Image (cartoon, rainbow, N blue to C red):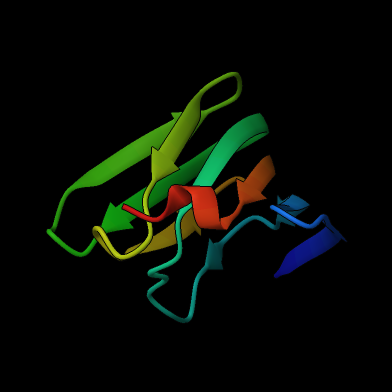
Length: 89
């Protein structure tokens, strides 16, 4: 399960997302994000087959559409995420 709190601004959206243990996304996301892991651990799978582990204190960034991504968490995680048109390639 994912719990999300969102604040929309004219140029971006800011979210706090808390993923439960054993979380698995049910879709591929093609939107761009800048994310910072506040706690826990998250596995990010990209559509090119690569996988990246993000842990507390780490961040990641992906632009719109390149490549699509999906997230998983065995132990749960909390992320601070920023989305916006400025992430368009």
